[in-house]
Length: 253
Image 1: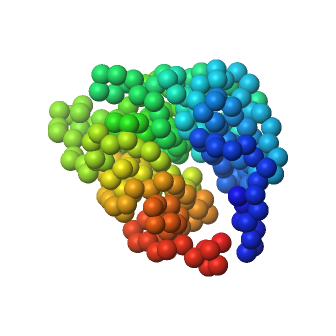
Image 2: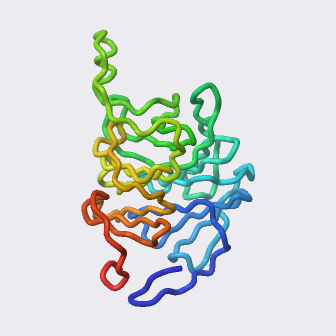
Image 3: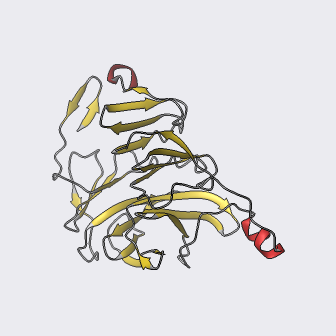
């Protein structure tokens, strides 16, 4: 569905996508993936769709992300496979990374975001939520890594204990990751225990809401404007996820 003014119109799109992605630099462009391995692209806000999965192996698409600073670059996480990348808006695809290896086994990537956050490893990361926790990989795709503070490596070299951090709960699947591309330090994560907020690109976390979240979106023009869906319906936050109120369509369109 698409909201226009005070009304909703049904989009002419195949039913039941398992993953969706957009980018603020490409208004009207939507990427949608399905569990049958199909991926389609729309350039008109969802009114029409074209195939965008040439070269993908046909495995279920679990998550899609558009590169933070390169909207023609798209990443797709495939079930039982790993990460695939397209650098031409979905025209062609190539495999770039195995699934993350955590706790002695590989895990599917359930949620995926591109984070343009300056660190000692460079500026662009892919953050991945799995059923056992959070991990990340730089866009050189050298290896999956824990999310740590920027000075953690310096402490390791100096032989000092790294600073204590407030991590996400252990052992919970990270079902949704969301952020505004221009505010990469503000990262939201939906877990069965509720919604969690990080103000430092995923190092430290605090719980923002205790109800399980089924959908989450951050306004790319205002990272403090967040909308979530839970069993009670839609909710809106105007302070980045700290406080929530019922979503009023007449005021928040």
